[in-house]
Length: 238
Image 1 (cartoon, rainbow, N blue to C red):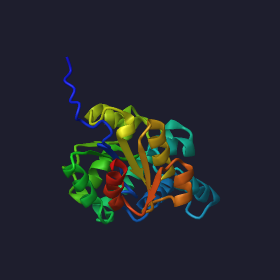
Image 2 (image 1 turned 60 degrees about the horizontal axis):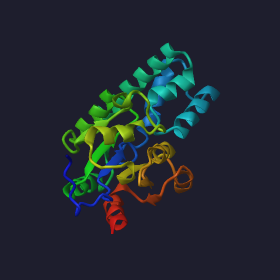
Image 3 (image 1 turned 90 degrees about the vertical axis):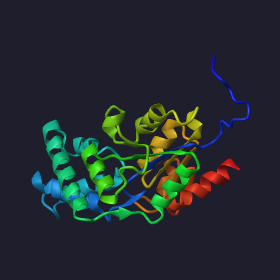
Image 4 (image 1 turned 45 degrees about the vertical axis):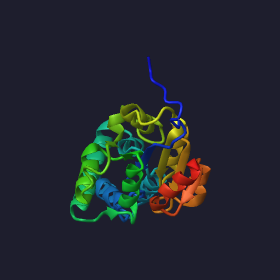
């Protein structure tokens, strides 16, 4: 038989799923730079109408699994895989060149949430190799219990709820989806949180999308940055 502690609270927001680039990690537009490098390798000339159209799509779908974006842009699977490999290589080189930094207060927010007994998971639309390069560049390899990329959740990235739900299944940190907090800087982050049933879906204004788009995409709250998230959670539980 299970032991049930009648004094235990089942409304604690104890699973926090955070996006990386634009939310906890400031990359200064490296996604667009890496896309330009990948597009050039496939013969898409900078300044051309095709380049501008593809870049606009990349901007609109920030947060989505990158291979999914390239499948849409290039159609044929072989081309999409070539573009994705070139993108990941270019982004990795920029990361290795010291072009990223933590969003101010992000590490402190994660450490505070962890010290409060909450489980924090970092998620991304990048491939695992790129995610690991970012974590290594920041010295974050041991910052959280779990990091997730789309492949860890069966291959579907945002706006699907799979990574958020995988975080729940892998950690067992909470009893229900309503005790999950999702935070991110893109509309797809918001959609994934809503579709997962998260109790709080917080947009942050340190990345790709603004307050209106985040709100239209289902944000329950919009914060200046992830540094404000611990305070929001504390207030929500009061």
